[in-house]
Every structure is written in C-alpha cells, then in structure tokens.
Amino acid sequence: MKLTVCAVGRLKSGPERDLLEKYRRRITWALNIVEIEERRRLIAAELKRRECALLEQAVPTGCVRVIMDERGKSLTSREFADKLGNWRDQARDVAFMIGGPGGLDSELRQSADATISFGAATWPHQLARAMLVEQIYRAQEILAGHPYHRD
Image (cartoon, rainbow, N blue to C red; front, side):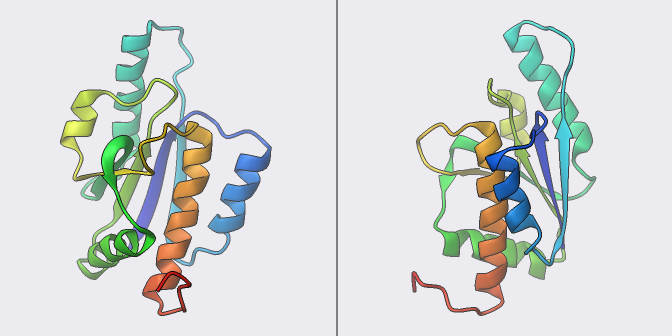
C-alpha cells in the first residue's frame, strides 16, 4: 500500500514540520507528501476551485481518495486503523487531501471515496497535516499488533 498526503500550502520550518517529520520517519509504509500551492492572487471562490484542481492533479490514479474535512466522519484511532487495514488488504493505494485555509470545494468533497474528520473543531491546515501523519503511524502500529493503550 502506498500512501499520499496531498496538502495545500508549504509547511515551513517550525513545530508543525518537526512534528510531521517525527512521525513520518516512523512510518514503514510508502508515504509521499505532496504540497501544492496556487501563487496567483485570486478571489476566494476561484482560489478554492484552483486549489482543488491542483489537489486532483496530485492524486495518483486509481487510489482511494480521502478528504480530510470537518464535515466528515469522526473516527477513533482503531476505526481509522481498520479502514487503512481494509484498503491495505484490498491492495489499494490511498491519497488523503487536505485543503487550505479556505477549505475544499464541494465538488471535490462529493467525488471522494471517504471523508474523515478530526472532530467538529476547525484545525489549522498545517497542524491537520501533522495530525494525519501521526494517525497513520498509530494505525500502522495498531495493525502490526503492538499494544494499544486504549484497548
């Protein structure tokens, strides 16, 4: 299983990048992080559409497309691991998409195979990226049978 995290914006040096890299180094699955950015100054609605088009282009063909959005389904770490485990067992690659500060276009949300939320709160997109990579690491450990303190 190959995993791709496609995210709007560049993660600069700082605590969010440090946290992301801490967990990224621990993941044994193939993990690619693709950062996209629209540099033109556009009105908000057009910027959101353009960012979503760039996200679509960054997603590998044929993979499970997962949107990270506050309107999605909130999963426990065990449920998240089970989802990843099912996709792994089906030999499916997975791409997670994280929008920018303006969120994601409704067309992209509707075309996704799954929409996952980190809860009802709105998280900075830079922090959501680090949280996602941490959850991927946690899922890997749960699926490998390592003791999970919540069981």
